[in-house]
View 1: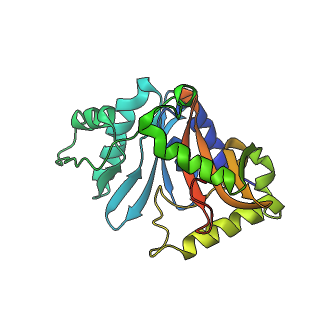
View 2: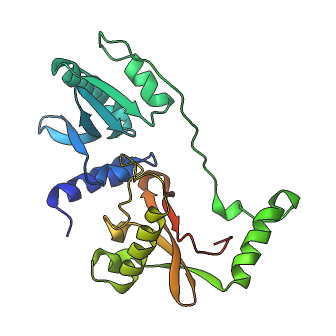
View 3: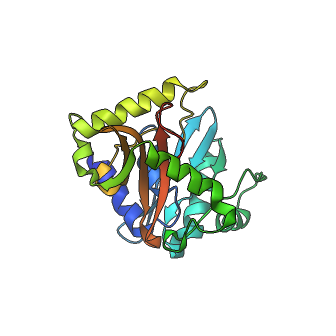
Length: 240
């Protein structure tokens, strides 16, 4: 069962979540800094972060409406400075950088580009043409090996005793056992069943057993989905 604080946070995410990392603010292990405003001091936004020494490492974009965006940034940085701490923003976009640059803070803010985020409309995606020949061959290979994929309702996965959930957990265990390093945590953690009813899932089966799964989380204010986990057993056929 999700906590009442989770539900309050989810309400803010549904209202203001425009960035793919917004839903991940619900993950275990994160602290939350609430931004309040107005005569009733109502919660207008939230910053999810982890405390590492004297650093607040912010997990993705702040979750807040456009009218309160700069106010939240300024208040969060002021609170951080007052505590004698520094803020590190991970997965920051141009709008966040501009807001921080304009905030009244005496501390220098440096930026390092570490990657770009791909976005596409799957309704326009196809596997035709010579440039996708390898992809078609891999899909055909999986089909010949008897792999079948389907979507399913995630609400049942909230139950830790669910049979399908147990199969997915076996896939996760098998995948982790094949890795040379442990789970990295912090936005790349494996928490595929948290708020399962809000997610979308696909599983790939072979001979009636789950050999891979995909979990996507909603980007509410963009009517989109972020593919958070795509995990397969090492023994799954190529193309799965």
